[in-house]
Length: 468
Length: 116
Image 1: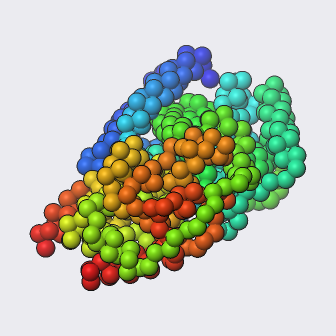
Image 2 (image 1 turned 180 degrees about the vertical axis):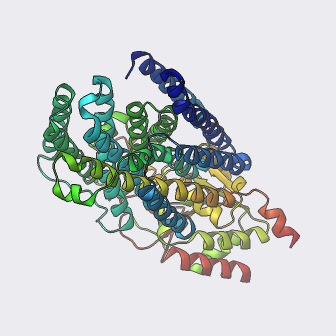
């Protein structure tokens, strides 16, 4: 055989592999497309799973793989831990699990980049080095950033913003240092000291980026970290010359980016404001705030009011998740529907700690998705609503966002529960919500407060309604 | 990287970005949490890069402990192993949780309950 023929035989398995990757890429896109409707979503995702399985199996025949010990160990351990997550993570813990998975994805990308650098730094083209630098910087900062976000959501780290004097300046220094190391490595690929300096600064920058951000802003942070993790995978694709990595990473990156924009719009923040990390800090000067008297309502009165209503709208917030009250809401809604009351749910895009958080919780409690209404659809209906029940939500129903241009959250679109004939607010205590803002809704004539643990209160309400 | 390969890769990136924007804009807010979980699982495809690194070089504990440039290959293998582990966790838990969530989104619950 001449050398060309030998080369052909050696490389031919890669044609099959590349073709497998192509099919897998198409199945991934198909799977994501199927997510445009809940009825088609599951089948589409099964196709994506099949594509993933084919791509992984095909890669095991890659001609560069000679030793299987570590691969098999990693695959088995990873599958066990992954399956445990998939089976046992409760729906209320979805935000922290998602943050952790961003960290895992990013650390994989960063490690692949670092390993590539240690083995091939001398032979890489300038372009490959720049892609590798981006991959490692995004990977490292997303790893630590996501771990901090996960810690805040899980309660390992206090959720309040950590701020100190000169923080922005320090962050700028770290960022410039990281970029400086990157630039040096671009021109001198053998300067591994600078490369590892960039890695260390990347990890540090991730921490600094997320500590000043409060838990209530997590939907934006999560989406943004999602985007960074995806883009770092896409950069890995450029480094390895692997198209499926570019495609999957770009899809992930853009998905995160689109979600961040949606979340920003839902909080009336600009994307630049988010990109430079200077947010979550505006909430301190609460201003004079609303004053007046909050009216408390007894459980029995609330039950009677709900039982004789024509239409009731529930507006859930993060309090629903912390109280694990999704099933209790559903029980109350069942009791009301049995009496002929129309029940709907109004979901604000940033209610909860990640995009779509409330929808998943309510779906878990067997609420049919046809009853879950987006903010734009539910708002025109609130005029004709007899009772709006706010469950553990605060800022997303704060009328100041609409009425008071000096409010820190001015301009943020809200669910206008104050337009309903009456409002019942379920709240743990009289204190302010997370943002520290007074909510004039609570002082309105048609608002009644019902204090206590949301889950208990809702179960008791359901019982009372059945007895009315 | 060969310039033609680079340009082809940029084509792929640009088209994937455009397609991603079109496809993901159509996902309703209802499914945003499953979307995040699904894209996470899909970007776990970086596993294919990790596999090659974890299996390309011979791991030698002695050389690893001796340090220096002789240890590089063993370090790369270890990093590849950790990357295989984390990426596999993402693929398995991402797809598993997406399916678990999507199973919960149903529209016919009321009819079933009424039938009871």
